[in-house]
Amino acid sequence: MMRGYVQSNQPVDAILCYRDMLKDGLIKNNYTFTPLVKACSMVSPELRHMGLSVHAHIAKLGFLHDPFIASALISFYNSILDMATAEDLFDEIPVRDVVLRTTMIDGYGKTGDVEKARVMFDEMPERNVISWSAIMAAYSRASDFREVLCLYRRMEESNLKPNESILVSALTACAHLGASAQGIWIHSYAEKCKYTSNPILATALVDMYSKCGFLKLALQIFEKIHYKDSGAWNAIISGFAMNGDATKSLELFNNMVSSGTKPTEATFVAILTACTHAKLVETGLSLLKSMSGVHKIRPKIEHYACVVDLLARSGKLEEAEEFIDEKIGEIGEGDFNVWGALLGACRVYGRVDIGNRLWRKIANKGKVDYGIYVLVYNMYREAGLNDEAKSVRRLMETKQMRKKPGCSAVEVNGIVREFFAGDVLHPRDDRMCEILDSLLSDVSCPISLYEYD
View (cartoon, rainbow, N blue to C red):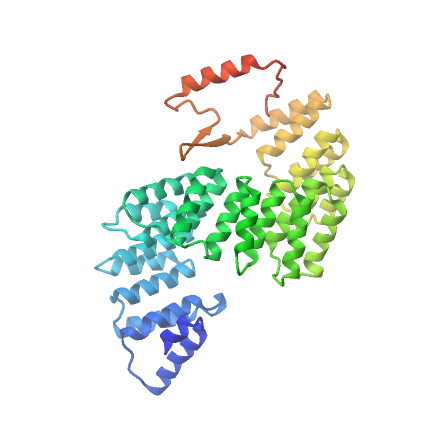
């Protein structure tokens, strides 16, 4: 009965069924607890404390060493991000099979501990497809997309057939790295395996093709998705937004609302970004207002940053400053995208007066991002205010501010290669520098770069 409730996505009924067993004095066995613990992992966060009571019952009845119950308990503690208890349970189990180890990898990945996940993965005597899926998902959550593709290639070499989850992780990596050739190959493989009917995988394809600039293909795949959830709509709206087609993004947004699909926070980030690129000020402000008024979504810092950027790019710097002042209680010291958007516009439009006021507000908040210093430095320098520029530079040196190395990636023969600014350890560094020097010598117009650009 409990297993049936869990399989029907009715976890509360499964827990109530166990309560009735306790009342009736029915005998519990090891088959009782696996679905029960899983039910505790499925309920809403405020009800998950019941899993702690179930754990106590399991310990009292002596079922802790059952591998299936132990795996379910570890999954439960993963769901509440309590990896310390999960590790204690894991250490007490004498026989640690592939299921238990994979469950631990999944938990480490969800809590952001990729190093422990990788150690566990590398120490596994055997691995199955779920193990590979868990470690790739861990790296994907950590935004190490290059390693995701490296793992994907290693899994192929082990002659294991990837499942849909693995393909989603690989496609997400291709999207972020612009690895279109590999993404197209994965798409072809997914079609051969009849996986493309999976809406999650189809959404990953839409996202990959959108980010790689293949909007026509992205739209074709999107239109074939039978059940379009908010994730699918967000992927296609965001795709057209980042490629500068605000008209199509707005059309798709309206279609989404008309279809009855509820927009999410990510939807509004995408559509506000589209308005920013097209400088659609009134439309953007109307959409921000509709978030709380119509769709009952409270705007967050990401949405405010979009609006500030929209106003700033449109030359409405005073309005952007007023907007920041109005939301100042909700914009904190770490929200550098908001400050940076307006400071960048002050530099472009030569509005040092507004830039000065902003700089004073930011400086008073304490910790300042490296990029903000660069924007202020260049704003003063371009305005001919060399003393102020030198003052910012001295402040950067005093605080030992350093820019994180820039990184670019290029896909060659299906392999993504990354290059970091200032890296001289590449085996072909000398040859690459020769080619760059040759290209620079062929440039006819003079190049002038600021020291901190």
